[in-house]
Length: 340
Ligand code: CA
Image (tube, rainbow, N blue to C red):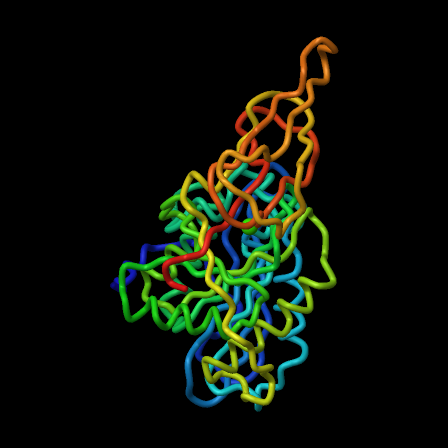
């Protein structure tokens, strides 16, 4: 069930007025006092396009700083959407973990934190925790829906897909599935992040928002295919929610719903070396099948070590860098969901 967010005092403030009609761009400013800037602020970019009455949709990119399709699409909307086309309000946030985004890194170089493992944040914590707390306490309560646009990032290459965040609320679950299917990605996947409650989408469903995630390619690149899927998918969802006109949507066939089967989804590196995958993304695989092998770089007498799939399904994601250390995620398998 949705919960009322307890708003904690924050030193952060905004240069935009959430209640003003029309188009505005500005910042969430959070006082930040590092060595080179005693009385400065960390600036998180935010845009508002508001017109008439209707739902408020929050669009997030740059949750991880090395995932680029989402920020591109959100910035395009800021430039391209005439307020007259909107019924309701878009809150556009392309680079939420702004220090990570500017560094092109998954985590913030300032405090080393993964924004997507900090919800609900801490207004008295390090800068990433303060950004999270501001977004959670001062932005989320205004939203009816939340789109969190991820890609695979530097370490993973993932099949472009729209993501369902699980919720125990059956009514919200129905709305989430309908919105995610409206995205029109080639694949729809339920991802529970092994039950982690600290992600943005987990916090968004707790706040009662209709929630849509994505995984768009990855490898730290901008994928032309994934960008096209993301660009149209976001418009499709905004039309589905009634914020943009239906002419901006392209009708999508509902795709089969897959899910990551908990810890069995993952194939982790068992030793230090170079990972050689045996299959391309999209391959059908089965439990116990050899998935790849890890080659030792420092002992010619040591044979490669084979790793195996732990689930029947479809190869959904692969590690991008060849170099691995024990525990690194090499492969991800998705199975058909009971929601299908
Ligand atoms: Ca991500």
